[in-house]
Every structure is written in structure tokens, then in C-alpha cells.
Image (cartoon, rainbow, N blue to C red; front, side, top):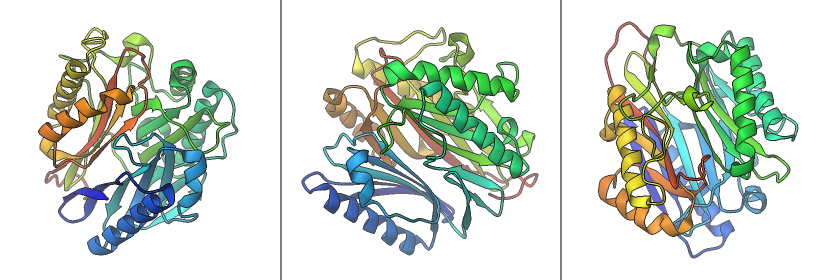
Length: 358
């Protein structure tokens, strides 16, 4: 069992719990859940979001707790260290969430985390994507917010991404257009990646984070124009990154980022080392634009198309980022030529009396 965590001011902690190979799924997942509870008690904090990454979600999801007090996501993306499970947990001090249905939980400050949601009927990937986003829009509207102004981050996990991602793109584009999210306004930071939930009939799983108390002035979008092109140039609708300022901290959400140049071309096709280098260079540019650096990264998830690349990538990660809570999972990227993609989340302490503390 390996547990790495990042905390700021002792009131927000991001932890990545990774298992060791060699035991069966029941033992590994049981140890992981125990480690998660012990960390919560040691910190004196409650979890606000958990994402379990499993090697076989259909058979292993039943080993997880049936009830929890925060948003939970269970995704099949096999950890590539040979284990059967890993878990990302975000803890916050004095956090108290209530379930508002459809996998969504809201706190007293108006923040909403959406985890697994089985209420959108199984269908093609376009229809399911539209259903998730419209449902989130309805939840935000009922909470005094909107999809356009208050959704900060989304995740789409797509079964057989090479064939079904186009439906996600189409469905998202159509919903966003209806809600005023365009290339002339803004989109939402996002990851669209291969992954699947426990139900084998469902082509898309969805998670989201929103904050209905946000003011427009708190939010800034990141583009990395020297290294990356606008996503709308190749027909997709998401932001490369988003920075959100509170009175005591800045949160920077970096979308799934791959080896791409500012013309939209894949950099170094077929070369995992060169693609990894360019990917991290792109992320560094976005972090800098958001006023952060790698030292501020609270967690990262690395997605690989080919398990044979894990040894190389693991070595690079160990050399460059040994202290960042992280895991590497099997998850083909949405464009076949991309061998690797990474998403991350950064936190930096700031003092800004214009806004309330987080």
C-alpha cells in the first residue's frame, strides 16, 4: 500500500492510495478502504470526492462500501503497477455534503460534486452525453446556478473510446450550444478518456464539479497558445485549463493534456519518451499561465494506451515528480496517435480580500 498526499494550510488534502500487487482483489480493496478511513481520522477531515480506479469494475465494484457521505466514482482503468485498485480522495476540513440525487452531493457553500449516476438511461454515447449534461444543468438551475457560469470541471469515461468518443463530442457540442457555451464565450475544463463503469451496457460514465457561488471575476481560462491550439479548431468543446480564485487559494484544473502543438498536430508520433516530454511541457505552460508550477500540483493521473510503455513512463515520473500524488492507469486517449495523456489539479495559497475563503 502506498499513500501520497498533498495538503494546503491543513484544510484541503488530495491523496492517492495505490495498492501493491500480489493479493486478491478483496484483500487489496479492503486494505485501500482501511487506509482511506485511517487517513481521514488522522487528518480530522471528511472526504468530499472519491474516485476508485479498478482493473475489473464489473466484478470488483461489489467489494466497495455500499453507502458513503460524498460523491463517489467507480471507473475501470486498471492501475499499471500490477495492482487491482487505486483511489483518489479529496478531503476538506469541516466539509459536510448532502445528497441531492443522481450521484450529486452539495455542501452549504453551494459546491456540487457529481459522481456515478445511473439515472441517465443506457444508450448511444451521444444520447448519454446529452443526458448527463442536461441533467447537470437542471441540478445547477435548481441550486441557483447554471451550466455555463458554474460548472468548473467535467470528466467523460468512454467505453471503446476509439469508436464512441465522436458521439461524446457531438452530444457535448450540441448541449453547450444550447446553454451559451461557445468558442466566443468559453467552454469547461474536461477529460474525455477511455474508461467504463461497472454496468457493461453503459457506454459513457460522467463526473463533474461545480460551484454555484462563483462570480465571473473569480474564473479565468487557460489557453497555452504558444504550445496548444484552441480546441474548437478541431471541433471539440473544452478548455485546456481553468483557474479559480478564492480568498485564500487558487485552484487550477488542467484538462487531459497530450503531446500536441499549437496547430493541433500530434508531436512525435510513435515515440513515448518524446510524447511524454512534450505533454509535460504543455502542462507546465498551462500551470504557469494559471500562476502555478509543478510544486503546486496536488494530484495527477496519467493515462496510457499501451501497457508496454509503463516502465518508461514510471521511470520518468519517478525522476521528475516523485512527491506528487499520482497513479498511472490503462486508458487509451481519445485520438489514437496519442500514446499518453495526463490531467492534474494544482492549489496555490493566495490572499485576495475580494472573495470569500474556500
